[in-house]
Amino acid sequence: MEYLDGYGIADARRERLFKGAAITLLATVIVGSLLYVWFKNYPEERRVKQFLEQLEAGNFEQAYTFWGCSLEQPCPTYPYDAFLVDWGAQSPLGAVKSFSLGRSSEQGTGVIIEVDINGKPHPELWVEKKSGVVGFSPYRLKKIF
Image 1: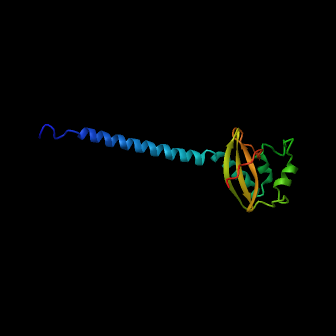
Image 2: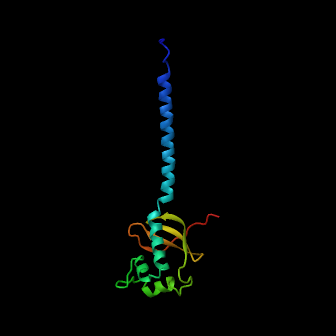
Image 3: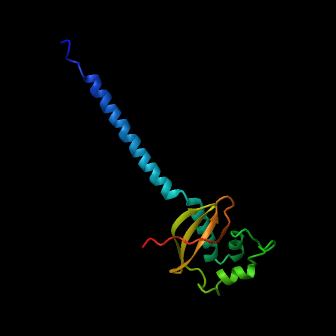
């Protein structure tokens, strides 16, 4: 073996290792960022989905609890009768037979979620992050197109 036969091998190995680590780090940051953007409002979206599932099943009393109210302690500004006018079978939308969730956007202390009920757009719903209370959104999502 000659004196200079192994010259540069350690540098090439170090360069490959550095490139591999840089690519792995970059891929991890990109994938992590995408997952964060995709799932950051997941708990609030799941809460709205559970609320709409209760309506779909006809469990109006249970659905009312998602608004932070109950029959024993109704909300002073949203009594159960008003809830049924908005969400019951006789509401303008009718009984909830199908629904889909659209975009969601974090706004202050809550999340705005687009909802389609029975194939029709419905005013956005709001979920307070800390308490999980559902309500009508005080804000509107900006239209993309």
